Amino acid sequence: MAWKVLFKSCASFIGILKEKIFSNEFVSKHRSKAEDFTRDRKLPFHTLLLFLINLVKGSLQDELDNFFKILNQSDIAVREVTKSALCNARKKLKYGAFQELTRDVETYGYRHVFKKKWKGFRLLAVDGSTLQVPRTAEVTEHFGAWHPADGQPCPVARISMMTDVLNDFIVDAVIKPKAIGERLLAMEHMQHIGINDLVLFDRGYPAFWLFSKVRSRGAHFCARMNKGVWKVVDDFIATGLEEHIVNLKPGAQVVKQ
Image 1 (cartoon, rainbow, N blue to C red):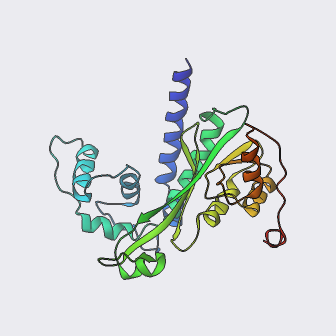
Image 2: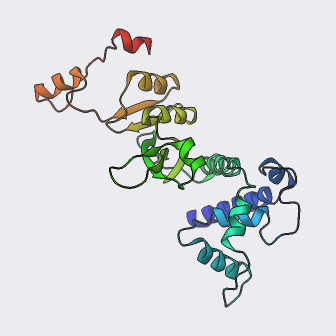
């Protein structure tokens, strides 16, 4: 019975998303120019969007051919759209379309689908990484590059995600130039947390100002901490105890931050 209710709820939401994607208001809001997606093309706004959210993993041309094979209910993959046409159409689409759809999924999901919690807390894990981006002058100038000992500079961006680990849902994700640190990227996620959230940080994140931001939102945090960085941590380890309550006291510079 529970699965039937969930299936019905998800089917209903897919209908809501479909209606939004095909709406003139959504198209106007998320196209780069007013004249974009106004002509009758093989890759209109809604088709382009559905293709891009279809977890493209293989080569673009193979993915396109298979996508239109399924779309046209054909037994044979016929080339209808080239990858160059896709790249041109993609430039006309604003990334905000994906952000808006993600927020819709989040709102609907927490009302009807995402119910798992740990001792009453929503568990939100924050983690960051780097991502290789296309090797163009414009991209390199914006995101920056790693300079290996051998070979050409490699354009790299820094990414960060906040994930609801129990419900397997990405609450927020950001991509920024590599010069911006993981802690600053984590700060951008804080607008999505609140009361009864428990934010999980790895060893690279502990900082008074970040903890303070979490608490200012009414949320809580749990963080791994390195030895040799926080004296209170080293003193605790030296006791041999498994658990203990200690006070973390910020210094003058930390208070200023």
